[in-house]
Length: 306
Image 1 (cartoon, one colour):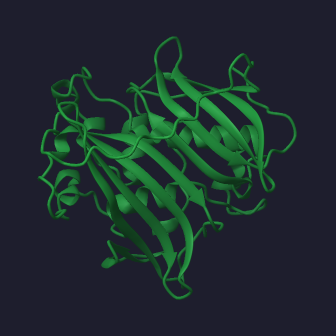
Image 2 (tube, rainbow, N blue to C red; image 1 turned 90 degrees about the vertical axis):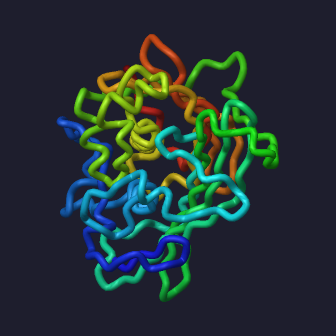
Image 3 (cartoon, rainbow, N blue to C red; image 1 turned 60 degrees about the horizontal axis):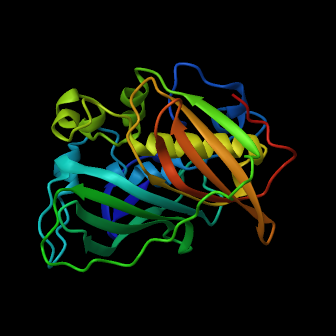
């Protein structure tokens, strides 16, 4: 797949660059058949190509996360330390069904900085928009709005930025579904093979320096796996039945933690798609994904349970 970052070609790869991948687990659940089989029903993709290819372009090799992150300088903004960065929030728009292979296709990953906001002593927020585009037709397949938080790297007299929009769950309403996802001690090591090679998720030293006590799960692992559970439970395991998906990263997850997601239907409609809101927490612990919102085409009754 010919891939570009910041509208520049990085390298030429092959069709494996868009091969669908789930949050890896030693146990592949049977409900994922649409996203792992090449026979009937037809294989489909969900979030991985758009969320992971921006990290590694089309290379099949292990990359230096810190070096690749610093490759692009932002004019008028200090150089930040990527050894102290965590995910803030992500929103994905599913515009066209993602292809399962890029063979014979020419795609670009186009990334632009939307804003850099000085939050004072706590740190700095970097907002980026990433699009997966078919170069020949100029069709946009997906769009991701992401925020990264650089811990303790503020106070550089930059703009404070706009207030963020919140999507709390409905008050005084029981959840319509409760979903569960079990991580393992190896989950972060397997997930990083998708291309997100941040050492924070592989070795204990970075996490200890940042106050996490050791290695933590990728925020995107929790984000992706929760999206998968929502599609499985509410959307008939069909990626075509989700239009938007977003969540804010609220606290770290440790390898081996069990994630529990409470889902509420709001009754609000956008065409065929219904708004849902959700909160994901570590079982018996803190909320790890807040401000959760998605637009889904619901199929039957929610199937999720603990």
